[in-house]
Length: 173
Image (cartoon, rainbow, N blue to C red; front, side, top):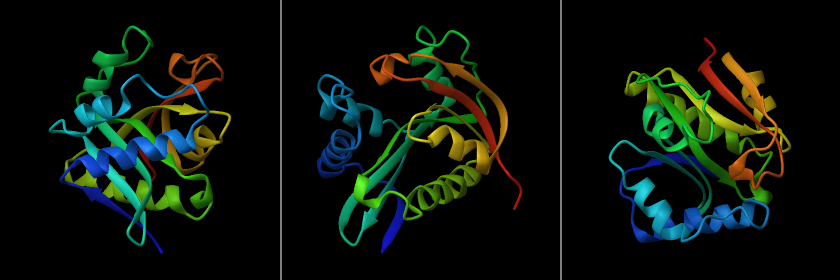
């Protein structure tokens, strides 16, 4: 049974699993240099929110989000139209192993993300969402879109496909 939960103690196993899930989920060539070192640094930052998707004891997916303004500092040269917003979180990365997709996995992760961010008084997210795998459409269908714009070739997708920059809020229940 799939279960999503916030990870509070980021150890080397969590970092390795996150990198492994990324490698197994994304097209070849999309991994960054020393992924474990990079992921470890980002995941261990104080305000990073990591949600892990588990099937029994096996980690099969993840999503991590950072304060929007942290992402803005990292991405402002790559996306000069990105906006600062101290009251939002940016979904920096997420992946679900192919065998676990379409099993309400993303919904479970997003539910935990919403609950955790609401505890922090955050109701707005931003992200660069892939178009080709349907993520952008899923976000559009399930959230209230504040802003959306297409970037035809996104650096972080190896310039191989478009992405949508999205600012969104959760729809009222």
